[in-house]
Length: 116
Length: 111
Image (cartoon, rainbow over all chains, first blue to last red; front, top):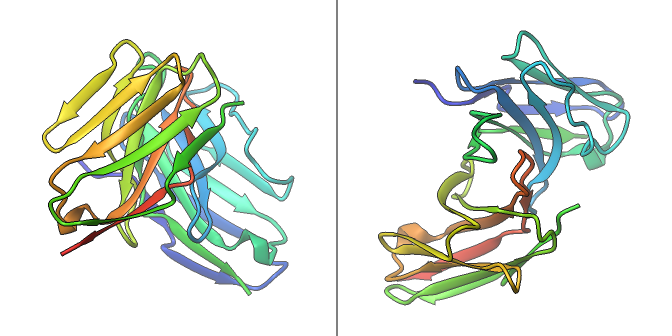
C-alpha cells in the first residue's frame, strides 16, 4: 500500500505568517509522530499521537507550535507567527502503535520549510 | 529523558572496507535500538534494529551489537559499497513509543 505522505513538499513563507503542514500516515497505523530536522542535524522529536489518547507534546519547542490529528488518521502541524529559526525539514512518521511496543517507524518525504 | 550520543559524526572508508558507528545511551530502561539510513534528499529508513534481549543481530553485510552493561551499541557495515554512502542515525527507546535519535554519522564510501 501507499507509504506516509506529506504536503506540501516545500513551503516558503515570510516571517510572522502561519503555516500548516499535513501528514497522511499509513493506513492502519495508530501511532503518528512529528520530527524536525535542521540542516545537517539529527531528528528532533516534536509530538506523538496514539489512537484516541492525549498526545505527547513534550517536544514542541514553543507555544507557536501545535498539532492535531483528526479521526485518528490525517495530522496537521501548525506553526504560528513563523520565525527564521523554524526553517527546517519537518518529517512525519507512523507506526503500528500500542501493542507492538516501540517498533519500526515509517517516515514520510518531509516538508522543507523556509522562513524568509 | 533519554540522551543518545553518536560517533563519529563523519566517516570516510575505502570501498570494500568496514565501517563502524558507535552510540551510547543514558536510560538503562531503554530496550529497543533501531538504526536508520537517510540518503541525500530522502526520508530515513530502518535498516536494522535490536532489542535488549539479544547481544548481536546480523542482516547480510550489516550487524548491530549491544552492550547493556556499558549502555552502548554499534553498527557494523562490512564490504562497504558506494550505495552505503548516506547518513546513519542510531536511536533508543525505553519500550514505549518515543525514539531518541543520535545526531547522525555521514558515511562516505570512496571508490
